[in-house]
Image (cartoon, rainbow, N blue to C red; front, side, top):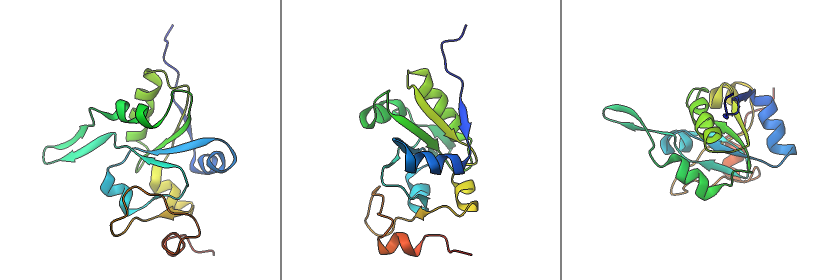
Length: 147
């Protein structure tokens, strides 16, 4: 019998619902550069890269679990997302493996979030890893338009 919990993948609509109706936090595991170009617009977004881009290709962040444990407890409710849903599976597996209990993988990642016209934030200038309020001018400029 395995002690590891199975990975539960939810779609972006369910993730959006949980972020706004429950006590979930969003953990973006993309690189800082990807995060700045656009991320899920939510008040409690964390950006802790699971992989780094290097001249040799992508390498795993050796401090990923330590950095997450500095920002979260193993009882926190987390939704883990990346660009397309691949890195977040590995990150979710790592978190479950060290005892995190309430972790969902967001299937499709940020690309699916954007395709579903859910709100995004883009970081410009010297703002670093600060999620903007939905009413900030920057967030409003980058929000999806209504059809």
